[in-house]
Image (cartoon, rainbow, N blue to C red; front, side, top):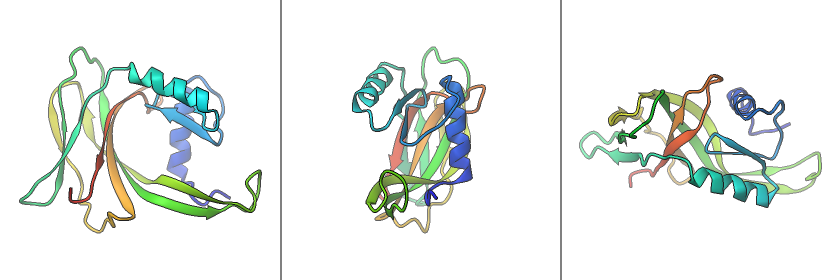
Length: 173
């Protein structure tokens, strides 16, 4: 059993598969910028996906901490020529997990997983114009072991599309 899996992760992975024309999901699967799919153990395929993603339009979103309230705000600039709609998605994650593998090709090994997604939340919609969004309270986050990031993702027919930009919220920095 995958001790790190969550139902909403599986739904998201199925959406990515549909949007890339695939019928199945697998492990290890890599989805780069919400658009390019590769087998995670195929270094050449992952590098090709990364290179394709680098050529896509992107938005440099920023996270700023309000010195008065201590809350976070996400700032998204205008993207000229953008048509459609995107959403800002907050992903809370654990920085690291060590997992003892009991079955399969890695049976008996302990694997170290990094940046394990734990929850997803919708911060709002964006239509290509400059805008700011408040991040829900992150009090209680153990910034030494956990993190939060926000990505700007195009809304596609099946819910998930290209990622236009992302920012990692560094606790207190």
